[in-house]
Amino acid sequence: MNAEETDPRVRALAPVCEAVALLLGPHAEVVLHDPGTDRVLAVWHPLTSRAPGDPSLLGELDTLDPAARDVFGPYEKLLADGRRLSSVSAVLRDADGSPEAVLCVNLDRTPLERAAAVLTAFAAPTASRPEPLFDGDWEQRVRDTVGAHVRACGRPAERMTRADRLALVAALDRDKVFAVRRAVPFVTSALGVSRSTVYGLLAEARATAAPDPAPEDPPA
Amino acid sequence: MNAEETDPRVRALAPVCEAVALLLGPHAEVVLHDPGTDRVLAVWHPLTSRAPGDPSLLGELDTLDPAARDVFGPYEKLLADGRRLSSVSAVLRDADGSPEAVLCVNLDRTPLERAAAVLTAFAAPTASRPEPLFDGDWEQRVRDTVGAHVRACGRPAERMTRADRLALVAALDRDKVFAVRRAVPFVTSALGVSRSTVYGLLAEARATAAPDPAPEDPPA
DNA sequence: CTCGGCCTGGACGACACGTCCAGATTGGAC
DNA sequence: GTCCAATCTGGACGTGTCGTCCAGGCCGAG
Image (cartoon, rainbow over all chains, first blue to last red; front, side, top):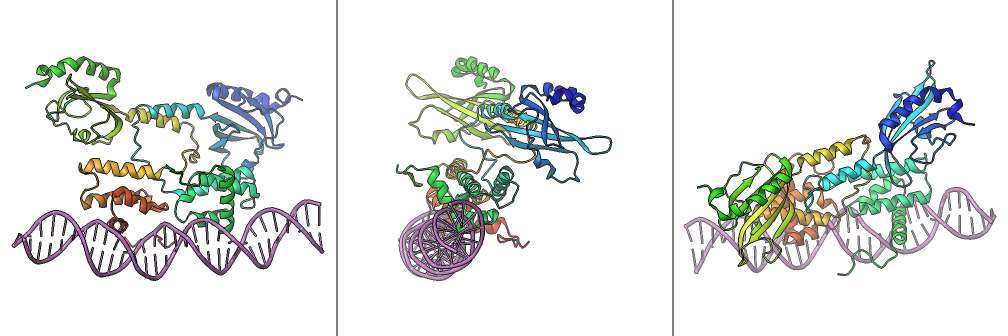
């Protein structure tokens, strides 16, 4: 029942995993996956409640270019509670070259980001920065947001459920994307839906998000 | 000749200034100004080559609301070499209430920002940030930009020269401000000119800035 | 099969955008 | 003081975008 004890891969790799987990302090977890069964083999310093035997949710990896290297990342992951992780993955192969295990290191960036925020806030002028000016690349931002939701919701590209599209439009609206000119037709093509649908989703998102009587220009 | 020795204000305030300069380490300077002559009285830990007797370049301050408090900032200053300072100023008055001296503390934020950059870069994913989303407060940005130019160009509020307005509009256009909806009427009121003028300046700015044949939609 | 929900393409009015121009105003040269 | 050139102004005008609305077509559930 306990893969940690019986599996030879775990026995062989445990020292490495534990050493890495110790080195990275209390804010990193190390997970060993079985690429055959797509399940967790072992976890050191778990950040979530995952345990050996749980599904890996690793399907993302095998959809990446199989001809590419065996090291992925660092890429970003989001936990349910909002913490942001930096993750790297390594595919470990046996003598034949077939995948034996996948090792993932997930580092919680939250404390680092908090520390950075403290530093940047120190004696920061109340005025703003003259450097990181207006977001010139809002189109790329839209593409990124859409891509993130595509990855988060389901593999299918633009065939997600209506709720997903609604959440996506709501997120874009929160980002004030629709305040820039020509935004709707661009989102239209990015989402692969018609202009009418975008307006419909937008109205629905705004109705459910702000039922208070503040249309867009509150008096005084 | 040496105000540091003779001026009673310097003798009285030197301990305070030196203490603050020491506390803030090697990255801060303390400057004591004479508001009457607009000249530097004394400097501790100078970041620039200013010395007692040099002009203060403090004219900016007396244009601020005279009824306001005697503490300004923190606001941002730029050095010629690009270093960014956080500055605070305090007006020191005698028993009659007339300004006796102005004390400025300038903190070099560069090392702090470098440290923050190191932290944020640590294990940062190659992808971008999902947090500092689209710039929601572009109106404030416009106000800040206008205010900065007002301070930099001339004392008068909205009676600056045409060239100043042109540079201002060009800066706003560089920031892609005119890509957001309803931007022109807002800039119109912020600049205190008519809509026609804004369009005229905008056309002129774009003509002189980009003489290449790239109107706005370069082929392929 | 029928129904209800959803997406679609298109039509439409309302605005915002950008251009243009004649008249008023300004500041400087003479 | 007059004259002139540059500039700002308010408004008119044509065009594009915005946002709404509706009739019709496509599913999946019952």
